[in-house]
Length: 434
Image (cartoon, rainbow, N blue to C red; front, side, top):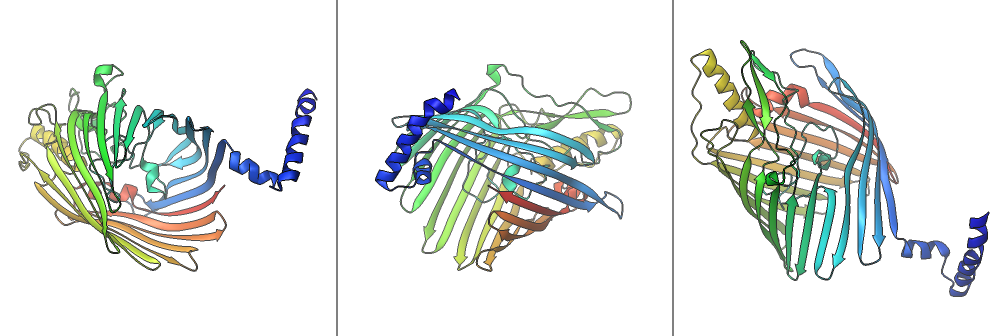
């Protein structure tokens, strides 16, 4: 009653001002709104083959709700949070979780911008594959129609200095967060078990830092960047042997990474490119979980033809100090061989020089209510192949139905050949947003 009594004069004043100005009250609220709230609800199903059986299984099935908040404080700053609520089944295990995907605060002081909190950082201008993207971890086991859901956040401090046409960026990552390796869904060779990971603690000497300089011109965008810290993608090390078995565990390593990227247009053709040189702090020949220095490079083009568009990229990698793996002669050699092989698979260093292509054609039909998309990757060197067809139909405003699939395939002793039966699946999603 007290609140109504105190706010009644203000309400009357608002109504009077609205009548005088002729501006509807809802338009005034939208224009002056200091916060935003949106999100979605969705149901997701993934089904595929049971490994080593001619039967199918539920790979993942869950319901999820997402809430996204943004609060503005005039021109001084804002804050953002993304919360996910999920419940269902995944990889034959029950899941019920609340995931604070991002939560950070921005403040703007002159030419400086500061962002502080749990956040996801995406670097690189190539499509899908970004060799300069070394800040935020990823989880390739996430079963989601949206590829960006594989990105995970980390607590960090991010700052910008804006002076056209340059935008300088500095990042400090005080604590390590690792990407998820698909070891728990991989059939490990006989005599090898999986142990707990070994990652750096919160000691500030284990923190990481990165800098980036963006330059944005009318017809050309580009950047150069440098990262010094633990690689979010860990290697695989061996634990102390126990009787006739050996335990393996993910273990992080420090590295330097220098990179550059660009995007431009020539007429109606878009061009993009990205490269990164990575080298570890420690001697890679001494530690089996540390990969060799390498240089990865991507050059691509994109083109639109009315409602049809396509992105095509060449993906290459050169591994320094490369040596072929020798076939094992004893049981001890076999275990070392398997360990070295897994490290090369996850770091994409099976060959000295690798050649691959990626592609993403998309076609909008029926007045942009039906979207056909096909993304894929073919590695000419290893014979690995990935394809993801997807059909999305807008049933009504902010209500979509998606049907598609993910297929991984490759020879034995390659990454896609190892995870093909565990991750290949068809998927269905029904989603409504607000």
